[in-house]
Image (cartoon, rainbow, N blue to C red):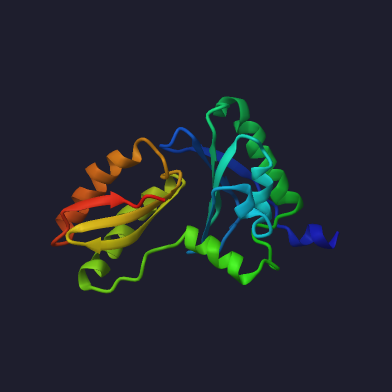
Length: 204
């Protein structure tokens, strides 16, 4: 009874993303504090750190898990289609949050937590006025839309006019993300930050 009282009621609903292999599952409670993210590309990375992610990786079609704020983005392989597994996966996540509720293992070793944070790192610290402006533009104009699609974008480097960003969650491997990157984000940064001539995605 005590454990049940500690876990707040929660419901989960699914949203499509621009990436046909990724779905965004939104919970009615916060999963990670604002600004924190976790990305797992294998079950081994999640083991011992995120009971929620490890639980999701028990399903054979899961290839990636990204957790931020109140949502978890799941990337599947091409063996199945979402119409076959979407409902099952939504209920699977919802039941876990209702019965267990642990997103992060409180006893996880510090090094393991740090490694997960690096995988889902936010912006590289800005060291020049141009980099500060790039981060401001990404946070104000780009990041909200990307997170609404179940993904994340972070500034990585700015060298010789080329901005390198990290794409995670549903954005990673998404066919349309490169179109958005070149046609939208690149044009925006060129207009708003002097010296920017190209935007590329870091190869993970």
